[in-house]
Length: 382
Image 1 (cartoon, rainbow, N blue to C red):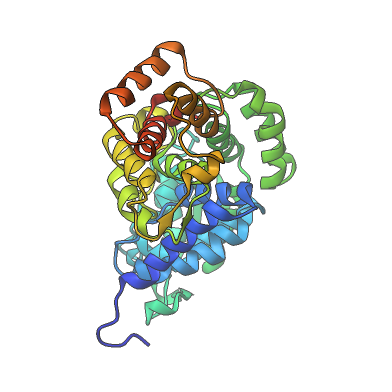
Image 2: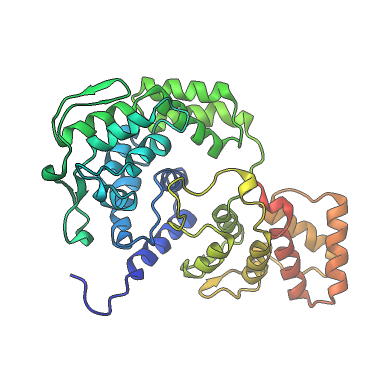
């Protein structure tokens, strides 16, 4: 029961906080990366009422439950998710006036891909199969319901698959067919390879992963094994998305935080959790994020100066010493700590000149160097 004065933002803010802390501190990092990947793939914009009540259930029962499981189970769970059905308007998909929104995205974004070989008629036929897939009254309970009186009767045909009239089972047959379709295998494996390898991953890795996808009937771990073991040799530098940038900075500094202070920086950088309005999810190409430098620079300096609420680190303890009094030594030590490599001579000399001209104290010297490194071009790439 929801009481007067209940803050509708409370459950989603808790979900955002929990998601961030898991990604930052969990020892199951591959699992958390896949939770993030599938949250984008099955994107749900949380500000559409009443999704702020429903997304927590979707996160638990759809994304996290199946993140390293079987793709067929994952897309099946998503198709029965009240949050997804609400977000893509399937409650309005009823006999006589079908709504194609969810049917289209189920094919274009969740399974086959935009070039997956389906037609407009396939979309309409799938929408007819999905009529009556809805959410129970008292939507905050998060229960799926099939409303038979809203279902379009008659036979359907989707992608050449003849569907006999069978109520809820009609759409479930199509979902099973879509989940293990060759176009789905290629589409999913391309996206996974793009996440782990490069913006333009090699076709031979995509094809091998897709073959594994089909041979294992959508086993996600088996597909990842191919991509990670065979594909990482082809890995290319990839510009960090805002979330990756923030997480990597906090990890390098061994930060203690409750995560709440990260909400505003992530919003300014353009990647607040569950806040992408369109169903395609946050972009996963480098060029989509290279225009958001100013918020990154601001975050770097606020973080280093310990200005973010309930977010603390000890830079001196990480170095095991305070400033040595030698700019060259301080720059080299912090560069090794934060970048794991060395700066080219031109960049190193420029940083030393900048710090020297600032006339800073020893503590401020370390802060300026560290913040400059986190804001540097080298730290923006993985």
